[in-house]
Length: 421
Image (cartoon, rainbow, N blue to C red; front, side, top):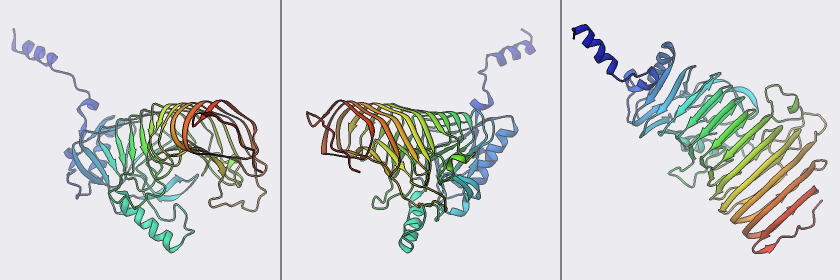
């Protein structure tokens, strides 16, 4: 066989490796493991090089790589290999201050450790870990709160772990998020995103130091979001559905409804709510939670009713929940944090078509269902529930059409208490 033909034949037998499969290891661009060297420039160089070649996968190999904010680009995936830790810098100056979405509005604030904006086909995967180095930022916040008990959540700048901004067709999979300085994973105006196999925890080595505002996943003004096979245990909301706040929030074009949300096959440890709506939220609708486990001290469903914000929560179904923890099933109540009507008349709120069904297990209490004066609360159903509770107290306000079907508490059919004004 002629040598040229032999060479061509041998080349054809070699495995084909796409740029994405080959990857762009950050160590090829000067990143150094060990947790001491600041690798922001090297990691960004890997991202920029992949983008310049039309796309590819930037790979964080095994080891601890310290970094400030990095910014993904169109066509560039981020993969954290087994044993990889992308560890956020403890210096807030390593997270640039830019105009960003935070707590229902835009202002100059610190960017996240990992940022993506306007990307179609976003891909971020593990099995490695993002570590936010949270305790140093938490300590700064609590020191400021000690100096000024009325300081706001964002008065002390703290970085999020991930900020995904106006992205579509996204997948964030099989990775761990730990010790975020602020929110862990923030989606803003995203569509068609799958979050699967993600473990989000606040397991700080200083357990007496709580992580303020360390929400697990914040779904902000986004649609068609699926959260599947995740474990979330934090010091704040597990999954928060967010929008805007204030008496004109329903006119805010930057805050479209949160809708078409599916959460399934997840486990919640500690937290303020498997689903929480309301710190900043206007319209939240069409939310399904199914086949989940509550194993810690977390509320199942939290609906905050801000008397300074027009809100409408509807069509929320929680189905097939196994209870093995110590929290509340329900917390729907007025929420007054940083109340401000801005000189305008108070708006109204509506909650309707809320269903909890097929709940089994052991928990602490049923919780509360009540609103502000003038709120419309109707069509709430508890169905096929059999629970052992440490406290049978159930605080009720005025609710139109509250229905209980086959609800058993501590082995006995449960009767509704009289509502309180």
